[in-house]
Image (cartoon, rainbow, N blue to C red):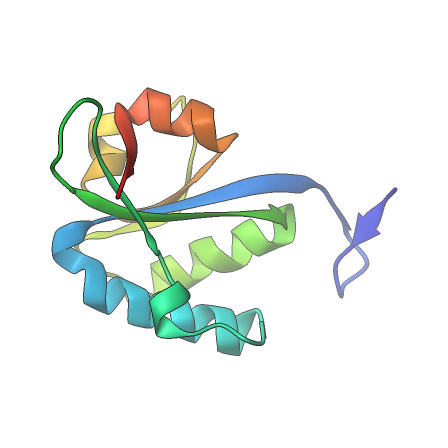
Length: 130
């Protein structure tokens, strides 16, 4: 099945993994909610549903990051990257990353990483924490 954005460009499925250091959890959640409700016009999202997965180093009890993952399309990646650029945060990414990027850079930023979630988490050396 083919999909197109509002401009008629063909778009393709991707997995958007959003990650943020726990130190920036509250502002990141507010920004994520604003993006989802105003830019992507998602309904039903609430602050407590934004970045609602805790991550930390494999084998540790420490929570170092907050995280969420969603199936999306390539044009949505462009919207998220543009939102990060507009915010111009010292702790925010300005583009979408992949497992070809430097994982240490990714772990310092509020950003998105494209790819299957299990592969991305393994690459980052992180796992889901309770």
